[in-house]
Amino acid sequence: MSLLDQLINNTVRPDVRAIGTYHVPDASGYVKLDAMENPYLLPQQLRDELGARLAGAVLNRYPPSYASLKAAICGKLGVPAGYDVILGNGSDELISMLAMACAKQGEARRAVLLAPVPAFVMYARSAQLAGMDFVGVPLNDDFTLDLNAMLAAIEQHRPALVFLAYPNNPTGNLFAAADIERIIAALGSTGIAVVDEAYEPFAQHSFMGRLPEFPNLVVMRTVSKLGLAGIRLGYMSAAPALLEQFEKVRPPYNVNILTQAAAEFALDHLDVLNAQAALLNHARDALSAKLAALPGVTVFPSKANFLLIRVAHADDVCAKLLAHRVLVKNMSKMHAVLANCLRVSVSTPEENTLFYDAFQASLV
Ligand SMILES: *Cc1c(COP(=O)(O)O)cnc(C)c1O
Image 1 (cartoon, helix red, strand yellow):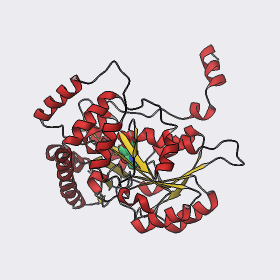
Image 2 (cartoon, rainbow, N blue to C red):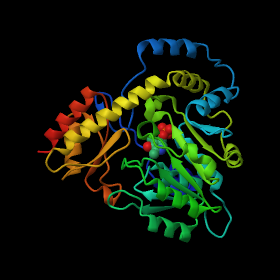
Image 3 (cartoon, rainbow, N blue to C red):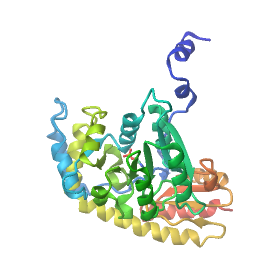
């Protein structure tokens, strides 16, 4: 064994050595429909104004305080009065922060992070890296929550954190609000429910305004799916006393000053981004109807900016789409309920047509 191999064996955790790195495929030359990005840029005039705004950013100093961005988020994105937010370098970082804060060590058992599965992959990954046990509770075949199984698992495992993506990724559906309320109530003073609203700009359903009803609720969002995936900004809110605890695990300067300036600028033009989201919602419904008319194709209802599609042979279809230079996500291997499913982002009318034509050609 080489010295480097020995060094790695002697130092890096076995569970870290065992996992693969998060793979981001090179998408140049492809129609990129695998990551739920908004295909639209800001209009040229706004981009010019943004350039001027960024030119004024004070790059030689640490970010001074996040007060003005937080105030803009609280004021414009429905955070209840008296509630603050914590910012993250993407909501991925917020998920890690929650896991880090709740991964109690040295107790009789490890702390548990629970989520319905299939779920967003970072929940299990963050739990593992923080030293929590991950418990996945299978969804029903129609992707609704199996409420009895969720309540039984909560009773059995007493999770410190329960993550619920609303709408869910990769299934695209909104869970029943009444089911979520039951889960929050069952957790009571023993666990925190985290409602992850990454797709709220499309779904237009939220628990944010209901935070005052539930002391054990965290609501998390990101600007990524709204059209700002490149700036990496997530935010979460909860009862002030709870939020104060999570603030302690946040790296002090985690959100950089360019992100801060760009986000404040974007929030001044929120109407532009919301109009793009509305356009994508229409495009989604149109594409969904077209795809559903194809023989042997099932399109699942979606409240997000992507569609989950079942075909007869997903591996084959994905390989053929790749040959057509179209990148989608093959979900087949992720979970039994996703057998032969692929996930595709909704895009511009041009790209949706490109996808539809390539997809149709890939079915034969
Ligand atoms: C995309 C996504 C995220 C990650 O968002 P970032 O802010 O880009 O890190 C979180 N949760 C869900 C459910 C997502 O689909």
